[in-house]
Figure 1 (cartoon, helix red, strand yellow):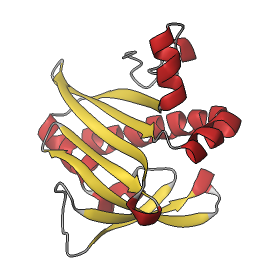
Figure 2: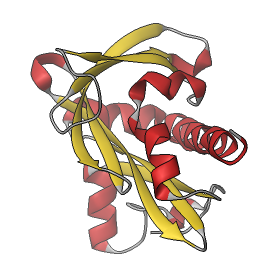
Figure 3: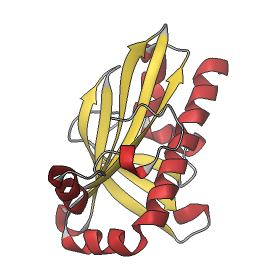
Length: 182
């Protein structure tokens, strides 16, 4: 993985991009990217920022609020929540149902955005790695390889990919400010 630490990296260094047959196949089947920002805080201090979905509106440029569903009150594998999204910060406004897939306190939090009939649309996640007296926090997304999404990504992916990348950097840098200057 390209250690970009919040900086944009050339497509040739992004996961799923490259010249080998395997990387070309990966690009066709799965679209993914990630951004890493170092925070001068312990994983224990960062964990509540990435795993408390009710706080996402403080950090994300697009998801302005979220709430737990079905009696869930906090992060746990299988818990569902609804995220309210303002696409590209201007609209349209819509909501998504998500399911927590990974919940390893102080290490990793990931969830899947669900479509009709529980179909997996994409996966978002945060990985925490203690490093140099702080924590490297990586936010990532992976778009499902279903045909409609592959067609969408072929037509508009360059713009959406850039937007996702910039928004991940914004989200992480807002978290960095909150945890370091709280």
